[in-house]
Image (tube, rainbow, N blue to C red):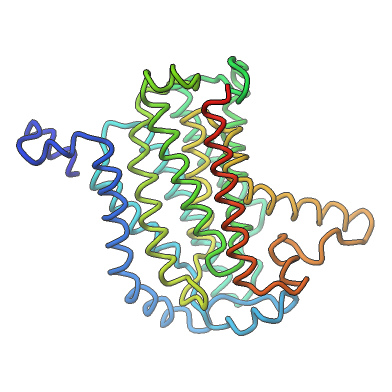
Amino acid sequence: MLYWLAQQLDFPGILNLVRYLSFRAGAAIATALVIGLIIGPSFIGWLRVRQGKGQPIRSDGPQSHLAKRGTPTMGGLMILTAMILSVLLWMDFSSLYLWACLIVTCGFGAIGFMDDYDKVTKASHKGLSGRFRLLCEFAIAGLASWLIVGQNGTDLYVPFWNGAIPLGPLYYFFAAFVIVSFGNAVNLTDGLDGLATMPVIIACLAFTAIVYLAGRADFAGYLGIPHVPGAGNLVILCGAIIGAGLAFLWFNAPPAAVFMGDTGSLALGGTIGVIAVVAHHEIVLALIGGLFVVEALSVVIQVFFYKRTGRRVFKMAPIHHHFEQLGWPETTVVVRFWIISFVLALAGLATLKLR
């Protein structure tokens, strides 16, 4: 909104700052952070009154989690409110990439909200059926992929190799798969206080650099990465996620006053997936978001082997619960996973020059 207003006025005086992506990215971080911190206490109080017993806690999980009964969920609504308001305030309304990302953010957020609502109202941890969720997710991701591919093509770029693999129509399915799978990977990671939030922030910090560089022809040419005109506008979205995530972490730090819920985790994961698709860094996403990938794989491996052998590979899945069962305190698991996430993000950024 402010960018549009400044544009209509031809960027006079101090409004000339709004012309620069770096300024708007910083402003988006600050705006989302302030909005989140302001609405947080009222939002949590409202959720606590509306939900009563809060999020159901699995009885077969770590016993330490039983103390969290009564903690309200759907805190992702707070993140999405702060994030979307910030993006709308600072975005360039002509950016198709930003609108594609917001479609996934709102769509996945709505699916997550329905899932959380079903769990709270039925006092069950099951939620919506997996088939229904995936069908809705792929429909939304497919729409976003169609909008994006019309602008930046169907080539898959591979790190360490100065070339591209033309996937043609298959790229639509690949892009949708990346978006859906990463959304669910973040959702599976969100099992401990603060565990998913900080790695999401770290991933967005990394992709802030990536989309800015990919949007600049000079930097993209120098680094040997695909140049995507207009991708730089996504720094506004990355900044808004960082600011809203930091505000939420203020209230989600152990002991959490609110849980993110599927409302937030599914939306944030899907949004990061779209950002990677726009920047043609889908493979690098698997490295930067390696923590989320490992969490998701631990569930797949556990289910696969248990159904075929009746034995468990891990004491409990996702893998963060495995370490809890080994005796690691919750805060130890969370901080060590943050460190791993930070190292993986640095490794992902290192691929920008190793080509």
